[in-house]
Image (cartoon, rainbow, N blue to C red; front, side):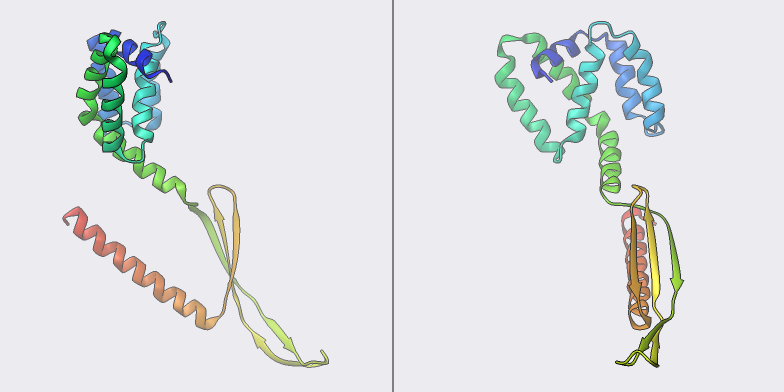
Length: 193
């Protein structure tokens, strides 16, 4: 990505097309597929790369770990580099003016990245087993253990096996109840319900 060249291209985007593209990102009802399909009509007509330049810069800001730092760094960098290019400075002003409209999009993308960072459970299965424990000579069964075997399959096609016993499974159930209660408390507190 050549920042100055991209900003110069953004400066050239027709105001109507620019507003439409920002609206596609800002519209909260657009999922990734909707957004892609709506943007495609602009991209197919983009012979000079103006639209792709805009999409690259939006993606760059979206991928930033700290949104405010990214904008501040861009401001500083563009101030330094765009002295010789008023078009680049104008392209940044245009985009920077629209950043607040894109905040909900940036937040949605951050939430998706957080969710994708961790393996999500696709399905799971719990089976019980009997494990006989033999004496030292392996002639007689002295006791049995009854493990619970939890198999977890994740959406990224990994499988995990965990073995629990009666005392551990009770602790696990209790921890899950506590986690569920905490999540409900947070949901109520932060959703205002």
